[in-house]
Image 1: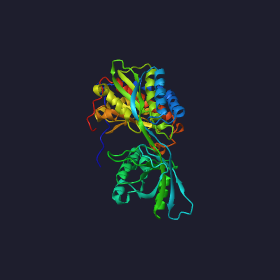
Image 2: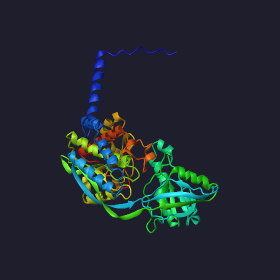
Image 3: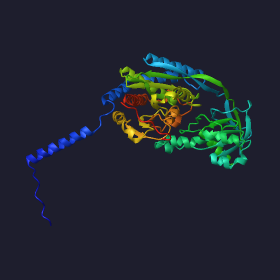
Image 4: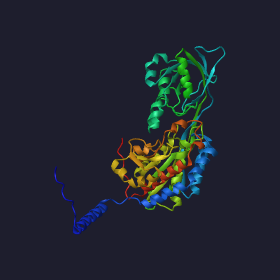
Length: 486
C-alpha cells in the first residue's frame, strides 16, 4: 500500500499572497462584466408598484361588465374605444383616437337539429348547440335540410370530394388537451383549428351546401367556440358554424349506424365597413420622444362572451403598464405607447392601419409588445430577436424572477397578430409567456367573462409588461432590427 503524503500546511505568507491574487481576479471579473443597460432598482420599483395597483383590474371590469361584447363595427367596440381613451387621458397620457375602417358582420339567428338518423323514433328530432363562424354566409331564411357528410380533416374532405356536393359537411377534429397541458396550447389550437381556418373554403369549392367544424377548444361543457373563417379568392362563401364538441361526437356515433340528416338555420349579415378606432396613449420619452416602444392588446372581442380574457386582459394590462410608469414619475429615453387595437378578431385592420401610418418612418418604431394570450399567470416573455440581443434584456428576467415570470427566450415568427406588419418590417416583437393550459376552455365562447380572470395574474402581467416596455425604451441603443423570416 502506498504511504500517504503528509498534510499540506501553507504558511501565512502563502495564504496572504493567494488572497491578493484572488482579490485581483475578482476585481478583473467585476470590471469585465458589463453594467446593466437599465437600472435594476428602477425595474424593481416598477414591478412592485404594478403588484400593488388595481388600475388594470378596474379598467378590465369596466370593459367586460359595463360594455361587454365588442365585435368590430358594433356599438360596443366604439364605446370601448371611447372608454379606454378617457381612462388614459385621465391618467395623464397623451391620447389619440386613430380612425380605422373595420368589417361589420352580424351573427343573426343560429339553430340546427337532427331530423333523421338510424333508429330515430317517430316525431323525435334533436337540437344541436352551435355558433356561426365569422365570415359565414346565410342559409335561406327557412333554413336548409341536407344529409351530413362526416370527415376527420381537410385531407379526408379532399379525398371524398365526389361525396361533397349538396351535403352539410362536418369536419370533426378534437382539440389535443395533452399538448395544452404540456405548454403547447398554441400547437393544439393550430391543429384543431385548421378545419375552421380552411375547411369552409375547401368545402365550398367542392360544392357543399354548408360546413360545420368541431369547436376548437377543450373543457367540453357543450360550449360552441366561434371564430373567423375565410374563403379563397373566387370561392363563394357558404353557411359555416362551429358545433359543440359533444354534438360533434353525437353525430359521429349516429353516423356509424347510418345516414344522418340535419336542418340548419344561419342568418348572419355582412354590412358595409364601419368606422372604428385604435386607441393610442403615449408616455413621451425624455431624450428621443419620436422613437416608440409599443405595449398593446386588442380591444375588440367576439360577441358571445364579454371579452374579459380575449383580449380585455391584454388591453387592461397594457393600460396598467403605462399608467404605472406615469404614476412613478418615470420618463424613459423613448416614448412608451399603449395601443388598444381595433378589429384583431376578424380582419386585423387595426394593426394594418397603424402600420400604414408609420411605414414612412419605420426607424422610429423601436419595439412592439402584444399581449393576447391572457388568463393564466405569466411565466416570462419571448422575443422574435437573436440570442445576442435577448441577453441585453437579462435585467428584465432577473427582476421578474421573484414573481415567477423570469423566463426569457427567443422564438421565430409572429408575436401578435396586430404587430405582425411591424415585425415583418424588422421591428423586434415580444409577447408574454403565459400559462395557457386552460385558455382554450373559454376562448371565443360565451364563458369568456370577468370571473375567469384572476386579479393577481393580471397584476403580474402588468408588472411584466411595465418592466419590459420600460427596459426597451430606456436602453441607450435600441435592439437590432430583425431580418425578414426570423
